[in-house]
Length: 394
Image (cartoon, rainbow, N blue to C red; front, side, top):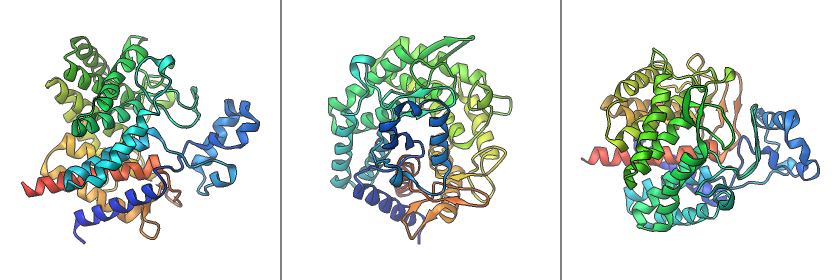
């Protein structure tokens, strides 16, 4: 089968499956949605809640149906599907894709975090989330979900010309600037979550990229300057070999594939929005490191710079965006195809028509996760199809 036909067939199977489930599903981190916590809510926080999440995330058996964890829509997952639908609409001009995207866009408008509390448009996850450093209640906004939803709504507004999608997409930049901007320990950055101080490169850079995009659309010079300042913080902390560790804390000193890809895509988006080239050197060095240390010669997308495992479609999907949007060369497109073909060989489950969550050295976790895996696959494969279609017809 021709490469693009194969990608399109898998992509269509992914979106059809999502539609059958009304874009709801399980998530690696959703196990605190279990009915068990209706009776023992206090156990969500602290060591028990953290252990409960990690057990369910790592288990190759999906206990969620037995624990009373419902399949739900996740705002970020829905945003990814929406952007994939728009890619398919642009490629085919088939209104079925656009109508489905509008339906999802309207749903996202109803899922904003509490406007009375946060003042501006923002979004969070559909589950309580317990991490090492903090506990995040359901619906509390975070920077990454907010930016992906905002990108989706903005893309939808460009096609529909509807202000109801445009306004919240632009308004989210005010949330990022007014609520998430931090000056701490000599750094200027955007935090991941309100009230938390961890400095994480991909979150801060994506914040800078979206603020820069909105600043360029609204001609807000203050926001342009702030976006540049924040981006410069991460560029300054890029290592000599072109890499970035995940963040500043002691347990964040790892280098992985998809976060490195996020950093590069965000820096490129910011540079394009502000029409600057001052970060080109950082992008070139970062991309060189990314291509050299986070892939194998056969196209395997590695999770860590020091270890290919776990194989994960998150790394593959982000590679599609990074190699095409940042790399931009024919060589990068050819390698993208190699990466995707390799991922289909290693992670696709043809009898189930979805991708495995993760493949480890000695075992696989084949649980069907809609936000983490399938939404990313659909968006990235639709983007690749649209890009390949327009690229090869010109």
